[in-house]
Image (cartoon, rainbow, N blue to C red; front, top):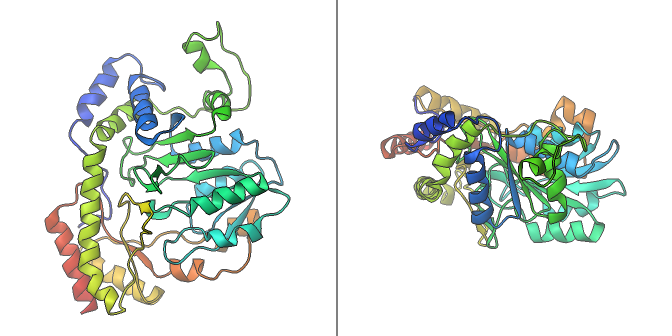
Length: 376
């Protein structure tokens, strides 16, 4: 079976795991955590990066940091993972879903303003497949209405918008290092990017269970105490050791994924030209990270037949999110602003193909040939 995904392995992970085990510090904020955070800050141009156990944890941190209260409204796309919504629902917020753009599958920036009310506190753009939302428009709206922007850049590590790294444009950014992402911290992991310097000190407190423990370890205070709400949002240094192995060769991983993505794109251009499929769209001002390659088929029936055909050939392809506004919890905790012009119909057409760092050329060629035979 050719899997849909396999966690990236570069070869130095075990050495760094052993080093972490021998360091005498396995909990958060050890040596490997500091290395990863400094690398990300320098590579991305970010004021402060804090590693977390998951992107879910990072989103929850963001909701706490922005003091989201019951009754507040938070705008986001419906086509996203449940954690994007859950983080704010846990604080009592109402999530307001906005339709997507069919070209990039990102939130339609032209439909956000109509969803803003006097209760709106934040906009949460989700950079689908590592392709940037139209952040200039979103940041302009945030400034106009005095709103916060939290970038869900779970899929966006090493992607950029007009030369600026995803996750560093809004007030807060959230990364994922889950095993399905381009870089992993041994299965789970995330990072919170603090782009507004005024939020850094409180972010550290929230991440350290509501204490000023980080300041204590830096020698800035003589004892640490309970200062605020918070939770346990530190990544284990074992996870950071695994992640460090991958960040050291981040560009190598990035280039390999981009090459695999381009192989798919070139192979299926004739199908797209014939109107048989739609291919991903990358706007000229966006640099993507080849997080995912997807095709859009005619409808959900053809997609089901396509997935079954590939499975019979021992190739795993998968669809993606069920739009949140159509889910039971979506109706309970949120509402759709405006019409569902594209979200449901486009989500039913989309199918994702195997794409991961260790995918061999031979296996990718098998995937391509099998897909071409399906359409033949």
